[in-house]
Image (spheres, helix red, strand yellow):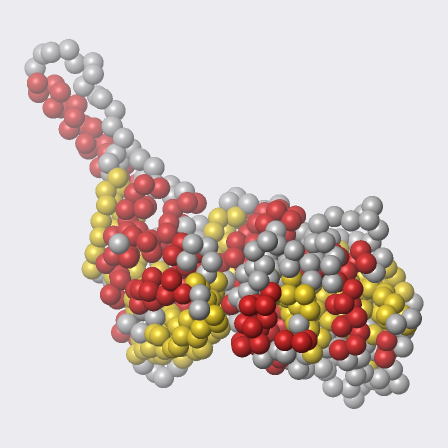
Length: 602
């Protein structure tokens, strides 16, 4: 296909605004799938995506469309909408020249709509504004057009109105993509360079890389080099996605496809690397991508301690497919050998755990998540703290810094007071208010990331009756009065339950946590004390009473000293048992840290 007849574009939107439905409709209209093979969420091939109704992985597909009597090759990338998967969106934008910005006609501009639109503008992409779901009775496209003009600066006459569900107006979207999105700028007469924007692992063919051809041509059998990894391979197969893998003889500049090069080792390929001919020694790698910065960390430990290697293999395959996920080995006194894993957010963490158990067939125990902190030591060093249990003693720390995020809320106007109160309780700093319309508002706050990462989103939905949305970006790290909160079970500190909290909230957090743990840990044959401590100071305690056998049941009357003797004997036995007995802590107890926010605020 001539390069001037290629168009690369993606669909970006907030959650549930109809990205996957529009992608399905485009596949049907262009004949990429037949009505017989059609199903909802064609490009969402993960079971988790279907069950939750969300897109987790960006999906690419090649379409052929005839516009004005000329056939065009369209490469479409369907992207996720949730903030935790924004890295998937950024990689997709780098492989495109244009973006269809989709907005729900009944919901209007939402937090993620703005975030994704600004990201596309920063990548110099051509924006095609589209209002979807105009067939709904609650649709108000005129007001939504005004919101898009006010917030995103689009021209009202350029906004398309469609219903992806019924197909109304979708042909106009295809025509707009062809007319407005520029053709790729690469040249076929230059040495080949291809950017790897995604990858998957196949048991039989090894690592399969999804690539965007920038310059030149690649053919089956060519010797190629990964410019950053400095490794050479031979291309076994090239192909395009329609939407299944369809082999072709070659890929040329501007095209999007996949590459199979018999890469067996998972560590040999990195997303953002450049594929070039092995003979071209003077070529520079393409800019690639900014490395994602993991913000939430937690420990993953195998339920069966002998399955550490199975867990490691499953994590390696997952990290290949999801480059924003990181892991490194760690050990815990309570849980043995495991891995410290990094995520972009809580939903990302939840998805990774489910994928591990489904795709890797590994049952894992997960510790309470924590965000990343910065420590400035008295020697002047600055280092990142990912695990609260590895925090140095207070004497070594000069300054402890926490991550601050700028959060944009799109909420109904009558919820402003409730949300501002919630943000004040979470140590938020007010920035600005902007009215979208008389009934919808954008509220911007700077908040500590640790205060929003657990239950904040649920509280937001509650106080806005489900209409509030939020998006955030990391600003940096600021000094704060933070302390390490230790949990002791039967006198022994449990490293997996340690957390870092603000000094003002430490007492409430500790009291709430020991109460929760008391409910989660079952009774033993001996008394179990659960304590929350800051350093050597115990700030809260709960006691789990022991299970007791009625040792005096066989005494019918008689001298009372006989009963006392039996009770004293039992007491001595329990005292010895307390010294040597082990307290079994269930998985739910490690996640008890998560649900303490409501109790603190009460």
